[in-house]
Amino acid sequence: MSQTPYSIVKMARDSSRPTGLDYINGIFQGFIELHGDRRFADDPAVVGGIGQLDGRAVTVIAIEKGHTAKERSRRNFGAPGPEGYRKALRLMKQAEKFKRPVILFIDTSGAYCGIGAEERGQGQAIAENLVEMSSLGVPVISVLIGEGGSGGALALAVADRVWMLQNAVYSVISPEGCASILWKDAAKAEVAAKSLKLTAEDAKALGVVERIVSEKDLGQQPFFHRLRQMLVQELEDLSEEEDLVSKRYDRFRRIGVEAVRETV
Amino acid sequence: MAFIKFLKPKNTLEEGGRTAAIVQQDALEPEKTCPNCHRSFPVSKLWADRLVCQCGYHFRMKARQRIRSTVDKGSFQELFPSVHGKDPLDFPGYPEKIDTVRTASGELEAVICGTARIGGQECCLFAMEPSFMMGSMGSAVGEKITRLFEYALEHGMSVVGFTVSGGARMQEGLLSLMQMAKTSAAVKRHSDQGLLYIVVLTDPTTGGVTASFAMEADIILAEPGATVGFAGARVIEQTTRKTLPKGFQKAEFVLEHGFIDEVVPRTGQKKLLSQLLRLHHGGDRFESDTI
Ligand SMILES: [Zn+2]
Image 1: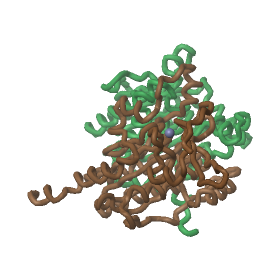
Image 2: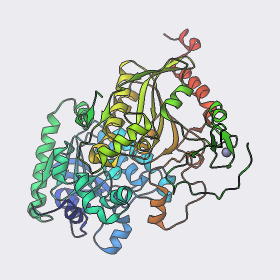
Image 3: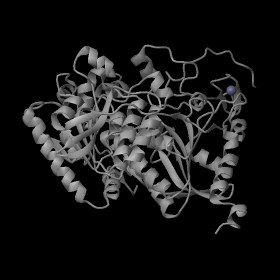
Image 4: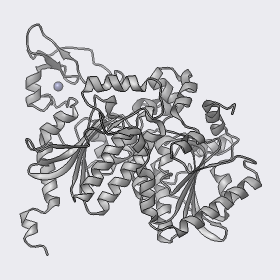
């Protein structure tokens, strides 16, 4: 393949890629949006609600970046604040109550770095999602559709199955951030992108994602149709699984175990 | 000896740390200068005060020093002491960096776990190590924290933790990020069995550690003046182009905004921890009447 990891990062960020709402509208029937975190505000960077998948009600949550300049600004460029994570959690707990599966679409450079976000507990909001998602009593599937920026992406990705689009990326830090911290040179982002192992292939090899979704016909009807069929099938499989929560625990429990040594 | 020195105030964050250098004064005992009040004290005097200056400034403390000054004498039993990280991603410069850090810190990894008694109360304990890549969380840190909560769950024990961390360890990439989910799931299992977890946030507690087990305790305490936040202050300034409010991301500020239960000076921590543990462990008074 001729693509470098950094060129994939740029593709993942491309504003012409389908955004969260495109996935919602392309895959689910009769989506009804539900707003607000019931605590402080409604975060436009996170869209959530109920839709139908093959006749079955599911809770759908997506980070939305927006397409036009105006829309992107209104969506805060897909950088959620604590309210976005709390809205997502509220809707996931609602899904659990009504025994609906949860499907999430993730596309963010990261959780918003702002004064208000810190004042209202950005770290606590993400932490709470990690805790609660780890034991949510319904099937959860997360799909990384563009950028998977660190804790801000993980806060919606503690799932039974995590999938990545072929040219999506998932990373603990942006390559530019990594390069400027480690080598005091943001221009070394190319090296950082390669070293961070942030592509879909890398993530799959590390056991972080189960499946890579081909981008053939990306954003077109056949693409959404294919993804819909994949989700329907996966939900069917997950519905038959027992001890879902304990399997989810084991899924994350084993990550990194091989990166650890016991003897000196 | 304790003359007030008029030094130019320094931006401590720019310098990547606030631990003052030890100043050798001729043949006298080594001294430490407080970055807050700029007075110098003999190291032995500071030690007697748990590395707290008379002005209230808390110097950074190594994990083993902290454990020693918190637990009952001789009660600490280390768990998983040999667990340490590799270089799973073949990350440029990481093996060399880790070697240097191991030699300089005298530790294999950025967290120390074990069991101990605090004021007679048995508990599991973890303390993160500031001199080991500023307590950054890679696979080994995540594994040790997770094992500690699993051990505490199996033995029905409370967990007391001291955090100090710049966040997830970049050099282990996604594996570091996933430790946030892994530790959080372990905290949840422990919590669901009605077991207690108390955390003491120390300077600095930021990034992926704030966004996981640091903010998941039943009771969240913090040291005075500790930086506690998710995003770094400089990143926020660059992103928002706004002046940060006074005391932004300091423990007192975070307390005011409702995310910390109490700010507790180091000198009062042991007593409060033992009281809290006792209240949850059902002292004599509770035991006699129940069931
Ligand atoms: Zn002082």
